Image (cartoon, helix red, strand yellow):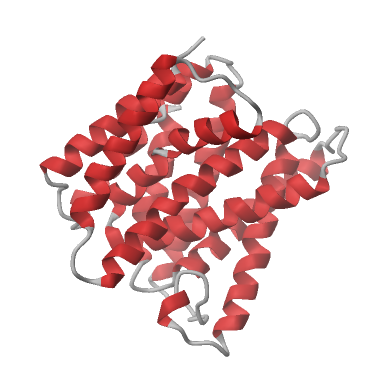
Length: 285
């Protein structure tokens, strides 16, 4: 899990490097083009044996996961790597609330305390980021929406895992991550709107120097996914989930190395609260 977290932070770092060269939509496209080749090859070598029967939920998982990626890469480009990753890692707050609402999960007092800590942490990061500019609010809201959509994506996996091979679930996400960006880029050829720039963009052929980083972005995301799956195969899900929060620590380091400002004291306290929240929710019986 530590390797997976490092690779996911590395994916964010490559996205941070590429932010001035290609749009977030193109990042989503290239990330999934590289990954789908490996997943497709795996399914050809060892065909999936599953029950199936939930195509609507499978499509939903693909779409919501792709939109979460849109928001993630857009957030990295606009609000910095550390803040974007921390927003994403606050997803257990929204996942727990959604599970309680949709599946009737009973939340214990400790879990409610963790949720309150998580909201407090997000507020300490979010509010100081907002200034007089309307774009600041927009950028942070889109960045935070990533956590909500990531929580819904993981919740859909809970419903799909008993019907589908995990590779099929990942493949649905990656295929959606190719189709939706192609639609977004097609619309971008006719629509130029700063208001919708997080989801509609025109295609710009990457510069020669960018291709190496694009390849590294796709490979690091794929390796992270492989090691994440391998980690959860050991079934120590609480400890593994807690170790996953090292992603934030790696991302703060990468962000500073790449020129992002170090979060202020409110932001650092907010990051710490999000870490505590995630660990409290992860480590449970």
